[in-house]
Length: 485
Image (cartoon, rainbow, N blue to C red; front, side, top):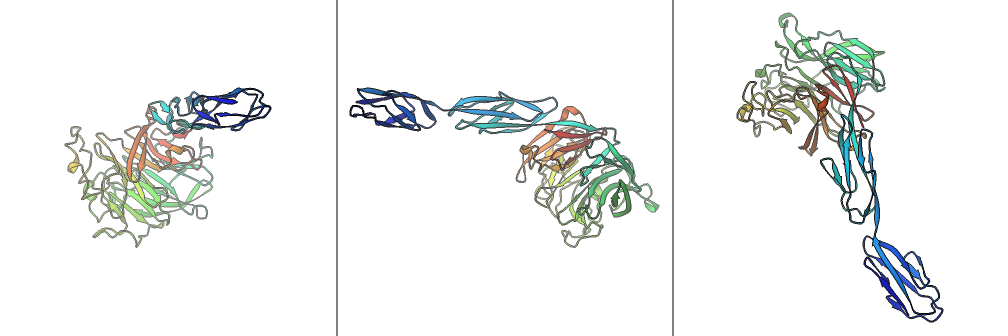
């Protein structure tokens, strides 16, 4: 007679069997979920897979089996700018493991995932472990590449990887391919008014740059004749070759020109149809913003030669180039990836900075409503202009900052592979807020936002995603940074 003895976690069948002298017997093992064989022996047998076969049996004997919970390896990997410990741990089936996630100096955690876990503070706790798995932590840190520029304002990238960076004083910087030195500095022969916040502003490549190497600029243009002493934002283009610019054309001018050096905007964004959006600030003269006969405080959509497009939204009594109205001072604009949907940020007064999704023909409320207050008002909600709430008369912002302003500047939606957890998130600089802001979206609604790299103490003016998948930003102090993993 052969009998079986087994503990919890599995079975051996049959539980007993009678065999003739010198014969063998076969038993089948079955494991409960998460268990494996720890040991089995008796009756001179051997285990093969889930089958245990005795040796020749000459007397009564017992097959004894013990089962145990399986153990799995959980490994942890981190990018160079931080650490995650321990690097590996062995966990019983159904158990969990904890890891410490620590960014390096000046670095931030971009994201951590794997093994069904969740982050609480600096602790990452896995879900119940049922197989070998790995955890991946991605960190990001700012790396200073270059300094010594004079009020850099806009960034774009040439097909060969060099960056073009405007300086507000009226020059265009061409970096080397490694983006660590100035290869050339080009003076623009335009009527640039370096007045207050004005000067040379944004820069963008023509969508057909490879075959028609034109570059577009926005800038504060000085008036002449009857407009002497006045300023307005203008758009110009020129042909780029051998680190020189030629064939300048002014293709659009904000109207009317007004005095003062405030709130010029301005950003240029090309759509997939190769038409262009241009953002214009209120020039510190809010009375023009809701006036449809002016382009002050508006977004316009024009062709590459500055001509007016027939399929712009029809706004009764409005200029035909107007796309939307009610804007105070937009210094960041970008298309949502995979769409022609324009998003922009804009400065509020005292608080009330906004991130907006732009709808054709939309009115965003300035100066009639804002979640901000007039300068000098006591901080709070009672002073919000027009009560703050935009709807239903005006369009609500996706996100806004109160009670004080961060002064947003530059905008990009991240699509690279260096920081996978950040894909689809919006990034924008902050001037008064001296930081980079990350805004995570759920559809068209803000899901979360985070202030990054505030320890730098830098006024971040523009943000650019490089062809290498890294983020770049320039600061008012004249520096170019790359965000590394």
